[in-house]
Amino acid sequence: MKALAKTAPGPGIALTEVPEPRPGAGQVRIRVLRTGICGTDLHIDGWDAWAARVVKAPLVLGHEFVGEVVEVGAGVADIAVGDTVSGEGHLVCGTCRNCMAGRRHLCIRTIGLGVHTDGAFAEFVVLPAANVWVHRHPVDLDVAAIFDPFGNAVHTALAFPVVNEDVLVTGAGPIGMMAAAVAAHAGARSVVVTDVSDYRLDLARKLGATLAHDVRSGGVAGVMDELGMSEGFDIGMEMSGRPDALQDMVASMSPGGRIAVLGLPTADVPVDMATVVTRMLTLRGIYGREMFETWYAMSVLLRNGLDISPVITHRFGYEQHAEAFATARSGQCGKVVIDWTRSTLP
Image 1 (spheres, helix red, strand yellow):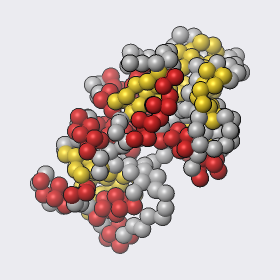
Image 2 (cartoon, rainbow, N blue to C red; image 1 turned 120 degrees about the vertical axis):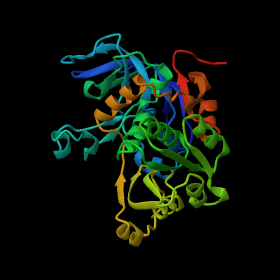
Image 3 (cartoon, helix red, strand yellow; image 1 turned 120 degrees about the horizontal axis):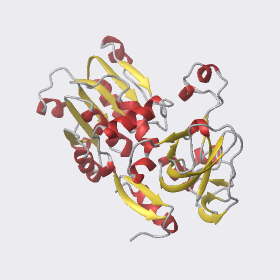
């Protein structure tokens, strides 16, 4: 079958032929229809220090996808051939303390689809049935392909109650934009998104941000004045991984404010702990999605009118993968989707 793979250590990926996977007991084989490009895929393609340390070539990339079930292994129930499905890309052990307690997103032995084991940038992928999410209601295939990052956004946006609250989102990447859309849909009083990209700030407005602010023109103090806020933000969502963004967020929170942190910094982040303590702020790390509570929330949000489709800005056929990756790397985009049913798209 055709697949996008890291064939050897070093920069670059190739569209190549690899053996078609077959499901074992408790597994499901899926014909891939669409995939989304993630920042993780860009790291593996570029072969940075993290990728060189973690990834073992050869490897098929990809963990954001939607597809159609074509075969189920022995013992699989409630998943049928023909079902439209997405997949949870965190493969867990099922036996550690957190897995046994139903907190699988905290599994100490988690491995990543398309990172530690062959992924979904291929015509077919095999997943444990426990990682398969069946779409029981109609869903746009492009949107279904990005349920993985959408889940990160939902997990972050709903980490704390947002109804009637003033929300600050630092980082207008695709996940940050989707988190802003979720917060607005869930009843936030105002949602402010900050970034340095005019393209993405404009996209954040289309996704429902009350105000999109370019921090090159200054911090968020002026934004608070513009919105009539006197005590600071109630909820923060740090999505950028930038130290200055978290520092500005901490300084801008109201007493008792709560911050969900999804962005991964590449270096140590000095935090004003005196402000955290004296204002009694809460900082909560967010990783991945709760299995499968977040997935249920995603489906319900979409059925109740949340529209995240504007975040998908570019679509390519599988033979256009180089252009697709270049677009995703440029930053002048939202989510980039590859169609595995067509070699090229106009």
